[in-house]
Amino acid sequence: MNTSKTLPRSFYHRDTATVARELLGKILVRKIDGDILSGKIVETEAYLPYDDPAAHNFIGKTPRNNVLFGEAGLTYVHSIHRYHCIDITTEKFGIPGSVLIRALEPLSEIDKMKNFRKQDQLSKLTSGPGKLCQALDIKRENNGVDVTDPESEIVILDNGSDDHHITASVRIGISKAVDLPLRFYLTGNLYVSKIKKRF
DNA sequence: ATCTCGATTGGCT
DNA sequence: GCCAATCGAGATG
Image (cartoon, rainbow, N blue to C red; front, top):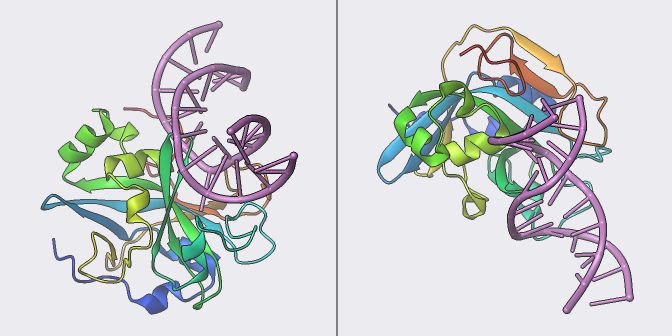
């Protein structure tokens, strides 16, 4: 796999909902111990710069969410209960906003993912934000990584033209601003979270 | 120092 | 569907 073809920073320097939608079909790559784990992004959620009570930037800048207020194209990794979630920062420099990666379709080093997850069933490997971080061994120490830099341990690659249909719906798993249609996923993809699994 | 709560998950009814 | 697990960040005293 050629991991030098990362999406440019200008991709992330746009409004958050657009980035969330266009991140679908791109490849998330995690380099660890000489292995290249990767998956196709099949589900995302946008968390907006302003007037979004569900966004972590809503309370202002803190030690935890610091990275949201800087450059776009960086990872924002935080923990929730026993798990971690990974966002990619968006908008122009200094404007907060991010896209939560909610699900992947596993592509390479799937056995390594199974080990990290202690889970053999393919459909349960990366079909949720906490699951995918466990599968790729992404933790708080991976916060603030530049995914546009080919040297980074976490990068996002363009996938060329990937023909797919996108569904937009309300965000899930949150208690505030639940009515905004800021969740995007590849229609019919088996790895989208919270759907009935058939295998 | 102590309390509260959550962008989740897995197990049980 | 419902609910407990479990822990760090943020708020409060």
